[in-house]
Image 1 (tube, one colour):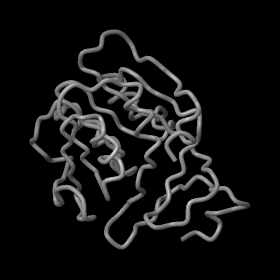
Image 2: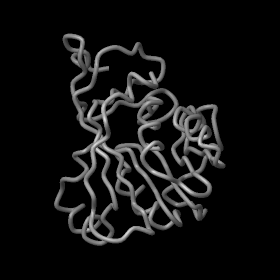
Image 3: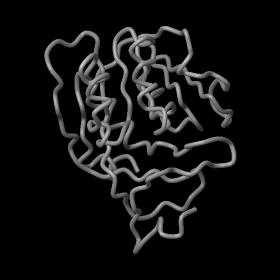
Image 4: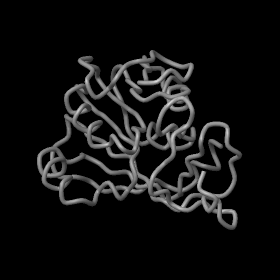
Length: 197
């Protein structure tokens, strides 16, 4: 790990996330970040958590009372392993996931094909930037809503000691196939971390 990752009790933004022993880019989602989504977005029908990791997000989604399908490319002891969301043929009502950072654009393309109603991706707010994404994703299929976190999310490697806060801004990007109009920019009310941590 980069020795400067933890600096004065805080965490610097990572330019490249390192891999853990079981596969690349495994940073479980804090429960409060998932609660923030499900308290602001209504989902009807099955939910597919397609990068479920150790089930951190799936267990929160299961509390909604809807059927949750959990899968991951890697076997982390939860859900169905060996399922590559980028090439999957499954169609479901909704997809909700925190995709690997280096595959975010591919997850958008796959979500447009797989989700019948909504798909929500937890992404860095900086995902809004970029000439290529402007020409492809945001021109052809912009999100319906972007829910910006007022509180910073810190993603820790599985098993790491959790302290301090991150310096990277995140948001839920929601594509709603039943929505009309242009992209709405919304802010999540502070307090989810304290309520669900």
